[in-house]
Amino acid sequence: MASDVLGRIGEIAADLLGNNITAAVDPDQFAWTEHLLGSPGYRLAGGTDQIQRNIIGERVLGLPPEPREDRDRPWSQRDRR
Image 1 (cartoon, rainbow, N blue to C red):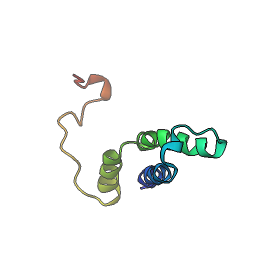
Image 2: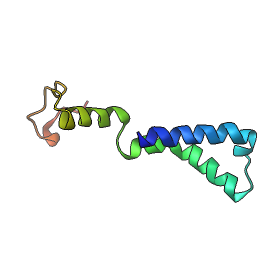
Image 3: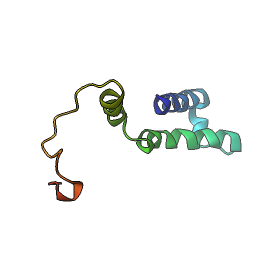
């Protein structure tokens, strides 16, 4: 949820600053430019949203895991084509 909120904050900053977000000279505005450009990485930092939802569903809510044929094999022996 945090990565989604951070992404939305970046979008709001872009809407408020308009074209100034790309040509920011003021250090305060440049911080928002940095935030906007870095916000897609927030989703990847903790795992994609879908993976996090699967983990919550399986481990916290006790939902059945997704079917995986190679579940019993170690990572080094899995087919990764």
